Image 1 (tube, helix red, strand yellow):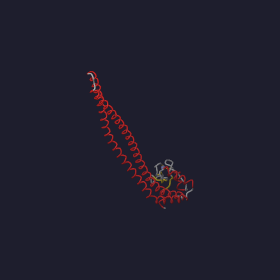
Image 2 (spheres, rainbow, N blue to C red):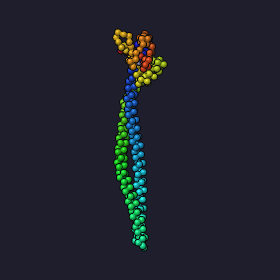
Image 3 (tube, rainbow, N blue to C red):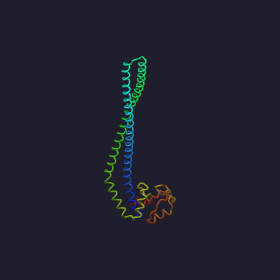
Length: 246
Ligand SMILES: [Zn+2]
């Protein structure tokens, strides 16, 4: 394996360690995002619920006013009854009063039903609040876990980044750029070893994707320090055997 491939391979080892740290960080960040979203959804639900409760309370208040007004009306009729001058007048007032009483009783039944519903709404609201509190607590824990992980890996990350820069210096710019592109596409895994599938036959495959590699590519790798990419997965190919010696 030539010098540049040698350097790329060292870079690859560093890159994979960095990718590993990055992936764990990303997993924790996604977890945090998930909990945050749930907390937000629960908050939306809680607000929606609060609006429902307010609307229901306004209806109950309106019904209470209605009941009070009808009560006044009934009292008014009751006074009028005592002042009725004829039987006919008396009967008319009595009839009006009874109608008022029946209507009032209907409104009271409605108000009672609404108040019962309010009780159920209150219980639902408590459940929503408890759910929200749980998601908020989960999000806080996830945030702490993410921060702790970043702190814990900071030193290793800085050291690896310095190492990466050291290797990068020894690699020609365009090749380093290509390596970085391939690494980004494959979660840091920019290189693949060429593997022989049969001890007695010249059949080779890419260790990254198992696609067969032509002899032309194999020869180029073995004889010249050339960068060869797998035609299938695009990884930079190398011979593992040569690396193991180092
Ligand atoms: Zn491949």
